[in-house]
Amino acid sequence: MMIALDRASLRYGPILGLSPTSFELSDGGGITGLLGPNGAGKSSLLQLLSGLLPPSGGEVKVFGQAPFRNPSVLARLGLVPEGDRLPAGLRADRWLRMMGELSGLSGQGLKAAEARVLEVVGMADRGHLPFGRMSKGMRQRIRLAQSLLHEPELLILDEPFNGLDPEARLTLMALLRDLAGRGTRILVSSHILGEIAQLTDRILLLFRGRLLAEGSVSEIRQLLDRHPVELRLSGEAQALARWAVEQPELAALRIEEGAVVISVRSPRDILPRLQRAVVAGELPLRAMDPLDLNLDAVFQYLTKDHA
Amino acid sequence: MSAAPSPLATIRATARGYAPRVLQGRGWVLAGLVVVPVGLSLLIFTLVRIRGGEASPAEAVKVFHEVLVKMMLPIMALVAAPAGIREDLEQRPLPLLLVRPAPAWALPLGKGLPWFAWGALWLGVGVLGLQVLGGDPALLPGRMVALVGAWWGELALMTLVGLLFKRGTLWGALYFFLWEPLVRVLPPSLQRLTFTHYIESLAGSRAAEVRTNQLLAQEQVTTHPALAILILLAFGALCWALAGWKLQRTPIGLAGSEAEG
Image (cartoon, rainbow over all chains, first blue to last red; front, top):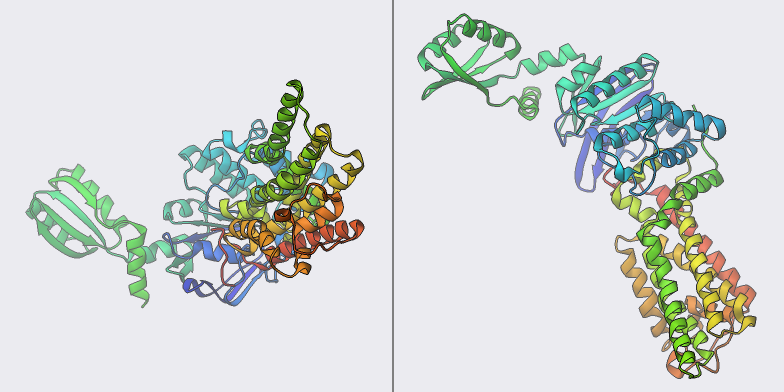
């Protein structure tokens, strides 16, 4: 197993960052998404796996060994942490050279690795710039470049899409897919299901420091679809209510002034039907507002469901 | 997969990678701490001579002991040490270094070496400037070795204190500026726990210039110069090693804070 957690937990003093968690990831390439709202414990888990922190309880093994300050594990993994962490005032190429040397590269191998990663992240002609003169997107690319220098077998990315423009997001996704296709195991965290769903074949669902579920994207989607979503439909309330009660996904309904608030399961099934009815002129709908589509609400529901 | 770099390769890579930092603001403050007092002394000395007055060569001894040794050297250590590991800890690039297969214990020394070299360079310039002021040429090597040796020890000590305590600069300032005056009223052997004692052992006597309130202790204790430099170098090495040990052992997460492991 490339990764094996056995009731591994992490405490920050009195605060529990990660409840005892167990899961395994097999060897070989592929992308695994770590999904959860902010504060779910994603970063805690990634810090355990990347050897930054030792577990407070249980056992973490990466490549069969405990990763904390373990050179033989660290030589095989790369980490792209969240946030801007590049030292001010240094040039990207020189800093990458240092990171390469700290990864055990030297001589021509180091030069080739530096040129390769700058090329891969599309910074070949801008590597000489100091970090202070780089945009957020450029710095994110350099953060990714430093993690690829030593061609890690396991690449860990913490919220890598935060702050990226759509084009940079697509470029990064393509790059990650390419790396995974060439045998790199990638673990990527996000609080946005859509991002993860575009990337990955497997999802780990974390909430409040607990591993809530693991499975394929469709399995997780089904799990999420069980959560009733509230929608406010504005228009002729009586007519909208008449339409709504005929829908099998309806879980609850209440009428407000000039609107009806419906609670539906599997919104992905009911929404196309709603759209067709409106287009056909069968439904006097003026506006539709989702009330609780945020991931946090979904996770709260799942937690209750699992309790 | 690459092999883990040796401690020496780690120190070399870190020192070379972070060397450009000394040419930024903090580095020039460090240079200024030496150049400004020596330069001002030279200016005053020159003005006095132009006006036909006679400036005493003893001024060089005074600037060396009272300004460089007692004030500027500790301030340099307090300014430079946080630029090492402490700054990376607070500004958060440190995890990127810690997830490398390089030995973490070698990082404090690697990051500190450029600052040591830069500070030593300017201390050398300062001592040479004092020669122009009228310093005794026979004392030049001793002064040079004393300042550079003490700089090595003080920088290492402040790096260690910065890793041990969140308010390392405060504790460092208390040691430098409160402990030595206190030693005057404590048993004389305690002066061996001050940098000033070893600097004075190396830099030569200032007997003619010293006043009672400048004495380090009620009774002077002497240390052979060779032993003094050895102690300074060994103390510095010990502090770098302890700083490395502290970093190696301490779990440091992405937030830069220490976690209970």
